[in-house]
Image (cartoon, rainbow, N blue to C red; front, side):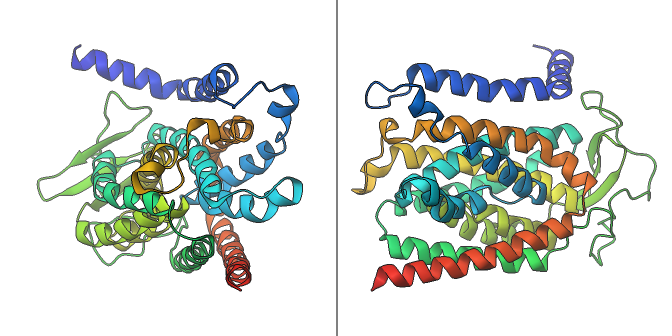
Length: 362
């Protein structure tokens, strides 16, 4: 296959990505309905029992993808506190599994949408994923053997850290990037009009890396960004700790990752878009370990049959749609307001988790 043919296929896929992405949950739901091991004959009542999860996860997916953090940061607390009010409480490992499966689909959807906009540095994303992988696997395996009280305590600590980091970072897309480095240019900067325009990208989009390592990127709207990929060691530290929590609780790599990219002078919109790829891939990996990995550490042996399929048939389509909506919401709304709302919510949830952990300990 020639380079021109590959570029044409890529451009066609990105141009019509909404269609391809929306087909994914249709195929998933159809496969689940036809072939999922449910442990016995089930009827319509089983499949429609948790229909109300669709609007809840749609709203949650839109919020987290707009800010660029892990979906499970909202999904897991929702399943701990809200879900039991309408149904039976879930085991921690089941909560994390549902959150991760839903998050993997939602973030994959949103990642493609951000790629279409030209806001993803794929080289940077793959490097970060490679460094986070062993920590994600370790955290996922650890989740099978830790007591529930420890799980809730660690979840509370992760949310407090996430809230603190959200309040620290500036996600204002329209403002100047906080940088004293001339290699970083504000969103929509106009330092050099000799900008890349790649034939396989939509709109006036392209990317060029100079000999000194400076990256010049143009999105599909024509806004340009300049930065370097330096600071790998600092990002590795954040993504390793975040990866451990990602595997353990279903979130963490996104919250720690976004702050490390902004701290190494990656422009806001590029940091959010790139972070989607990292979180999506690590969520997929963590989901696989949660489904198949329990027997490796002598913990709970979760099989496909134990997956609550009547929940994920609604949460997966909801997160996919939310992921597609997020880039438009990101451009239309004040991201700082959304970020502060999520930060306050995380603080409230973390207090409730600590109280729950304390109650279980005595």
